[in-house]
Image 1: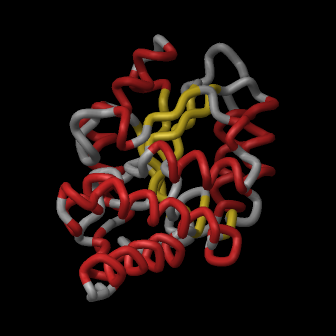
Image 2: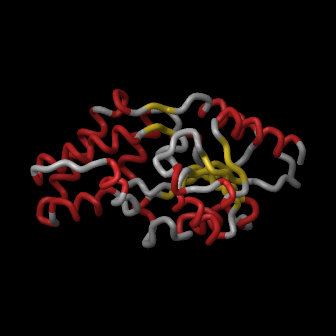
Length: 222
C-alpha cells in the first residue's frame, strides 16, 4: 500500500460482519438456558444481553456456581454445531487476500469471548489473516467503549485516522466515534439494521462485494 494512503489498518467485527453466526449463537444460548433454567428466550431477549463476552452472560443466566459448567456446555454445543448453523459470508477471503496483498494490517475487535472467536476463525480458516485480535476477554470496558480500538491503535503505533472499523451495530459505530476512527457500516446481515443509520457512519455497504469495490478505489487512488 502506498505510504500516503489513509488507511493502514482495517479492523473487523466478527458476527454479522465476517460471518453469519447469529443462528448458532441463538441456538447455543437457548441450549444452555433450557438445560440450566428450564426456559428459552426470544431473539430480541438474547440480543438485549449482547455486550459482555459469553462467560458473563452465561453466569448472569445460570448463577456463578454453575457458570463454568454451563459455559463448557455452551462451547461444546457451539463447536459441535458450528458448520451446520454458521457460514462465512461470500467474498470474505477474496477481500482479506486483497488487503493482505496490499500489506495492510488486519485486526479483529469483537465482543465475543476468546474461545468462540477462535473457534469461528479457525473453522472458517481465516484466523491466520489477522495480526491482532481483541475480544471481549481482552478489555475491561465492552463496546460501545473504544478501549478495544485504542488497544489496536497502540499495538500498531498508528494514528486513529489510519484505521477503518467495519461493523454492523450501533456499538461498533459508537466505539469508532469515541476512538476517532472512521467506520464502515456492514448492512449485508445485521440484526441491528433498524438501530443503525447510514448517516451516522462514514460509509455503508449492502454487500461485501460493494465494500471490496470501494476499498479497491480507496487504495488504488492513494
